[in-house]
Length: 231
Picture 1 (tube, rainbow, N blue to C red):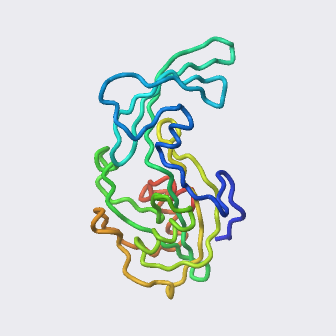
Picture 2 (tube, rainbow, N blue to C red; picture 1 turned 120 degrees about the vertical axis):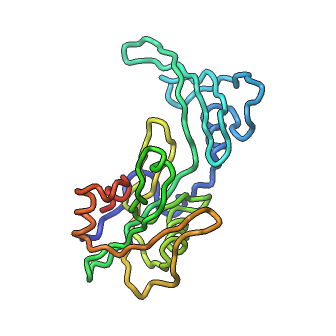
């Protein structure tokens, strides 16, 4: 396992803090606040995107609970010069971070295994094997990553290396994931991990030989995209 180089994608250094709320981002894009449910059925005021191909004609808030689901009606100028009006829905739950912890001396990686309800409702009955990850929750990516590693894996990590920041499902989900790698040694364990019971988490920590982790991708035991990308 080689140590990856400098991160690419979103800004990861220093002030990479996700301080702008989902509502603020929507206001900046459309002129329409997203933190008040649209109970009246009235359409919001039109707005203009920075890209002059696109004019957002209206927004409608469909849900604002764990995440924000918004329907947009927009006018899109095609390369041919014609204009097309259509609707799109976006789901915004904020950005996240994920990390692959590895022990290059013993050639092992540290992974998690946990129940994922969205996978369950599509027919997948086994817990998913993943790298450690979670939402930023208004922290900068590196701080959020250290928090998640402590909660999920019971490990206090040292220096971590940014790999990049990527959209994982840009057809409908606004989330970008900041990817990291970090060195791990058994002496870094400070607790059992397992996640937060109050958030419904019950996480197993797995130490897996790196060649075996690659075989787990090949035979379908690892199905999580962020984990496959980092491995």
